[in-house]
Length: 79
Image 1 (cartoon, rainbow, N blue to C red):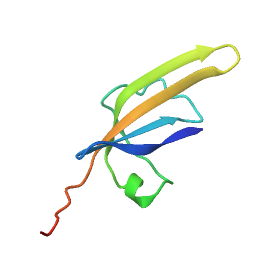
Image 2 (cartoon, rainbow, N blue to C red):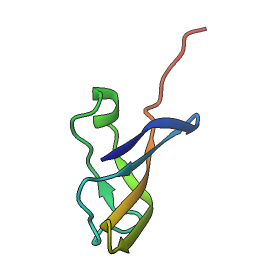
Image 3 (cartoon, one colour):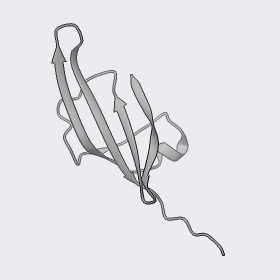
């Protein structure tokens, strides 16, 4: 499984790219995804599929690549 750590797209969204060990051809854009086994800060976010790419090759079989987006929780700052 290949993982790219989440990055902040803007102050309100985080992005996460993942290629799961098993392909999931039924996953499409805007599907909700639950992540488990990562940092608690990552697991707690509500992720949705921004982009899903499914490909097949004779040597690698069926592969799924997912780009996920999550809204970041609002944080209050004291001045």
